[in-house]
Length: 168
Image 1: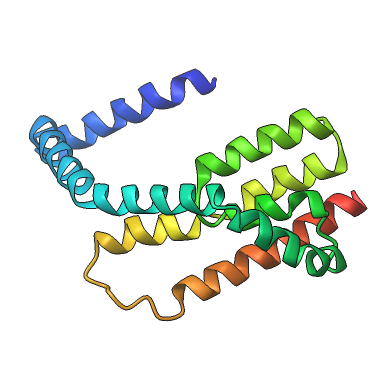
Image 2 (image 1 turned 30 degrees about the horizontal axis):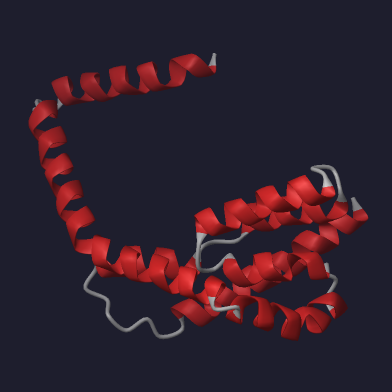
């Protein structure tokens, strides 16, 4: 049944375009052009974020920060094995994916630590990446409380994720 979702969606889209007398091809071409412009506009920001994340990891600062905050995270119910994962998660999705693969290989996919990492991965976001991409395309330049609130939300989500994995 799921294999029909995209064809049915496209069919409904074309029917709607016919009914409303909209040129679907020109709209598609216009959207593709805007997407290329968006990629060109956000590319420098993405390169800067990827370089910063790589430098953060390779410098050893991520590991030192993880070792420093591990006792606090342990008090909150987050396993110390996940601290490095939690430190890098707001910065990079691909780096988080690499770390979660490493966690699965080390502890097994059904372990408590792996289950916590899976739930954390699904309930948190790459805050700095998302804000760089989304805010670069808008006129909003003052982020205000956006990043602190997003980081606090991710942290609370991580605590709840570990708590749920512990009781389930």
